[in-house]
Length: 368
Ligand code: GLU
Image (cartoon, rainbow, N blue to C red):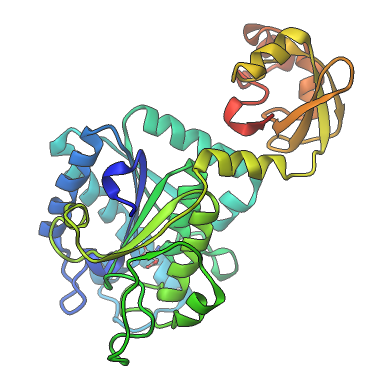
């Protein structure tokens, strides 16, 4: 059975209905302070935490005095703009007393669909986590129009979990798990404790009703589970409205866990290995040895670049005799790579005319 205490990198998705009272529209400050304590405790045992927090539109709606009915796109985007700044401040003020620094990350669907932007996002997140920061993520609702929106933070959270290589994703929801049918309509409905495989039967069990404030119903949660588990990340759905919801989950609160047979590291390597390379980099014997020891590929070990590739593209890694050693996602274009072959990291700026990345292919972006 999966357990939250085992997480080394945790993404927690917080729905709007948890932060904003459905009836009164009031902000639930006590609840926020209680989960902030849980988060601080989880951080203190060395687990990286990323929060995907909804609530910008719900908060902005109240501040602007807009009705609770569905809003036209421009108005919900305006509400998101007003609400997001408040949302970020609430998180900062709740976590700061525990010595936890927060950072805001607003993303759109394009940021993960485009490999270059995805790698950029990943690098920034990694840097934030390295500083011990808790990133507070939401969709950039103000600029995302319907065609390019996630629209629901369940799938956004799964995408974030995949991007940062999280091993667990917790969806704090208004239901305590995944049911065989809608428990409000079917007295025979039962909750699954654990789902190891999302079969067509399981998919057929997800209705599509969302709650009043949040966008995602069970269908989007199941899509999130598919995305997460395919990348080696386990996912739990649990009831979030109680005070200290993460502590409650650790103490055995009702939940459904979707398990994964993979680990995030292996899943990512498999993903990289399965791509069709756009070109190749040729490396010397010293670099080949370094890669074998799990190190990144530096420009100094590269003797040539073939083909035309852009930043973030998959390229084959070949040795001097033409044997393919593996492949990886490059941080330089083919043209840039050719300009910096054989150079030490401190020499690349002069060759390029701008400061470049330290490595050509990072070891995390490489499958040998
Ligand atoms: N991004 C939206 C917001 O912050 C929430 C989407 C959702 O409820 O899933 O208001």
